[in-house]
Length: 425
Image (cartoon, one colour):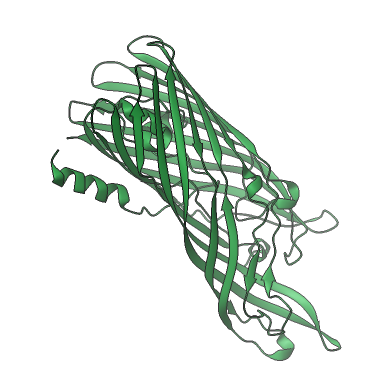
């Protein structure tokens, strides 16, 4: 094998992409073909992105392959806020803050039985932004989770029916949270008003693992299972508080450190592939994500934000999300040896309870409709896809420091566009 090609492939796979999720937390947009088929792409032939969708299927790659994918996500949505009596006190919409989900993959067939693959792609990410002067900003006016997983993978083909893979996962998380701090509190015999802005920004690396297996009943029917472990991040961050001291004490800024623990959930993928003939195939996929690991987002400070020891030294936020399912169906049809079309649909349950919602992730159940096309020759493949995600509605309660008692997010959707390029060596 040409060593220069290997070095180039590893470099491409290890490039940490700039990731921004849309109206969600879990990311499934790992290639244009995957977007086109609604994420139901566990059994693709000769596709380096199998490293992400189903590591056991890298045994379907012949030779040495590199791939890059770029997916654009543009979220849109509206909300209404209510006071304790149920009266509407504000309506607004999110600031459109589009982002990219970038994937890089490299797969090499070692021999007839063994394969090596590596990928860099986002499993969890999000970004949301609202007007700084809105009441929603007391909950969150800017939230961003940049995430990327680097997954070196080994796969083995036992016979014509069985293949399996195991891999490590190096997971990076970069978190930034901004909100307005507006609250009243007693200072001596008087009531003081706090009107400031807080920013928490930090990053973390943690380790996980994954395993996968495929079984082919015959030439037309195949099933697969993928497990991805939970990953626990201990996040150390910088704390900045501007004009956070009570007005009776004079305005002031606070700079310190923050600490929190976030556990990204483990998940199971179960897939089925059926080939009607040599040109057309159908995939079904179900994903179980154990969101119950996201029980709280509690952040602790080493300094008091309001200048009074024992007050505002932490930001507790209960989540208590429930475990949920995502279902997808994808269709692929080859018109010829060079041209193919794809279509997909996905249904993603909302796991957010009324008392665990916020403006960081104002996401209801999601329905995604998508189409795509692919061109390939002996050396290269180009694919494009378009998708539209109906995010649905979500009602959630306000927190103690929010300037509202309840919120209703509605008419939310995300535009998706993706392109992939693959090269064989």
